[in-house]
Length: 153
Picture (cartoon, rainbow, N blue to C red):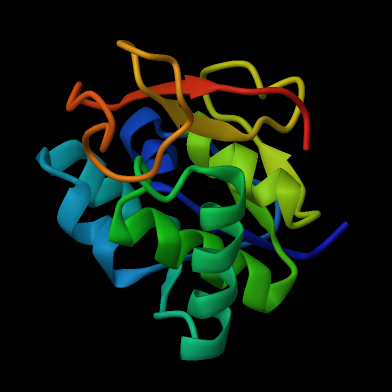
């Protein structure tokens, strides 16, 4: 098991104690809105450092492959990239982030919610005609796209 653990904002929101050296990305600090969460970040002694550009590209590619790029924020992608860069465990309750992390072979540690059971591939389908599509609306009938989970990768 890796001695490093990359923490999402939920670690500091819920105040979960983690075993190992805790690392997070600068964007997490911006996601912490209340004083209690920000203090937990400061007291935890977590290192705050950005991921490398190479790791960020790999994280984006993995999110694209699983279909999670539409729901992952830039901070989520940075967290994923940092965990990938360090081959670290990833502490998060975000299911899309867990999905992409498991796809990359990373270990996931849930915070307050259960861990996802399987890796899923998200696809967009037209709710009108049922065709798989990319983008915000169907080029055939013009209906807005609808996200749904597909089968295992």
